[in-house]
Length: 284
Image 1: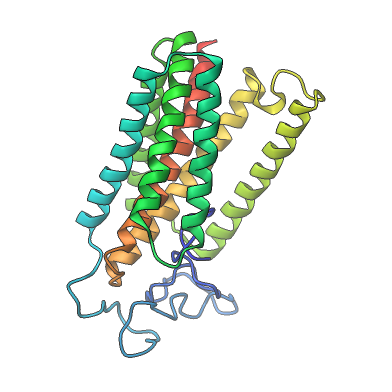
Image 2 (image 1 turned 135 degrees about the horizontal axis):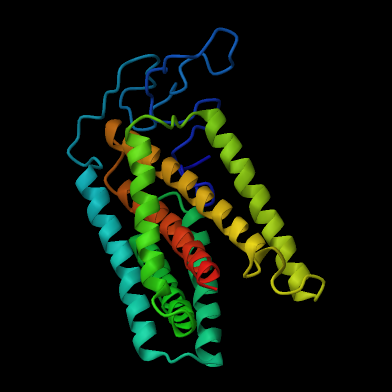
């Protein structure tokens, strides 16, 4: 895959049998006979002077490398664009059928821009910020709709998103989760199965086979599905954290920080939307 983000991947996991493509030394605990017993980071795409095998992390000698400050700044810009778009949409678009149509249209445009970026070999800040702006309009409209029925639900969803993000980061930094190839494959397989099931459920609802939203109903089953979706969002976050950590350690180019911000933004939007639905279900 091309990135830690399972949908719009770029670099995070290697195309071979390693679990990240930044040339880290093998981790302890890999038994003989395990297909991942060899160095899972056999190739550093940013190393100068050829491929290094089994060598300690050595970033290229250059000042144009991604740093944590770069990731924080780009993420703040991207998430800030989402927030501005959401606030403007909330303030300027009253709840109506027209605003709902605009929300759907904005979501489609955001998806198209994200797909274009996913197939580009280099990050495009314009595409990423364009995605963030249209995603913000979508979130602003649906947040206002939820707030009109469940007052304060968006604020609770924001707090819930922050709590999930903070807890996931704490667990990741504490080493309670190891982002290995097996972990990534299993998680992505579950995520893909979840998306397929949700797509089938949407079709069944659209054709009137499933009533009241089917698996996405505002009831106990819908709550269970929402919790699974939030757990998948936390899984995506661990992949994003690993990508950022490795990119900094192994000298990824500075513009890769835009991709890190892009991945984080998509994951946080995923968690927020699911948290918004979950809050509404529990409020009912």
